[in-house]
Image 1 (cartoon, rainbow, N blue to C red):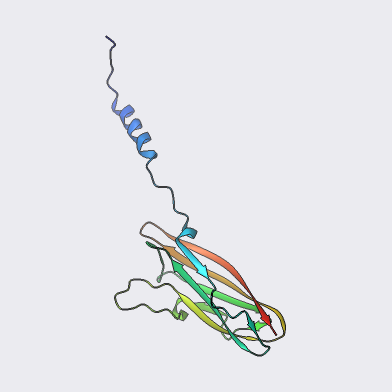
Image 2 (cartoon, rainbow, N blue to C red):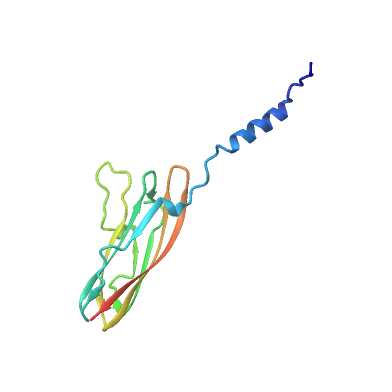
Length: 149
């Protein structure tokens, strides 16, 4: 009959650790926790006409845009001018309802077409997306073409 040796405490710990490693959750890519949309932005207008740049950050379940960390939206335009080029979370048109812990930011920024041709809205967005496990800084650069007639 073969002799069976008991595992030492260290060997048992190594086996237990190896078994739990396969069950550990993979780190979450913060970019998968939200979507950024410019749907609703004016894409065609006449010279001298006014349009609206719309930007929405839609967080996925279990995530939210931090209302404590800085959020910055910088706008520039080719053939377009903005009365306000730098915005913060306080400039969002989406407001928290009573009892609502977080709200997804939505910006609606007017702009004026200055000259005919192909215009562009250039937006640089910096914000923090958070879950119970992490809070990660995100930077997005967006470009929306605008045809000025």
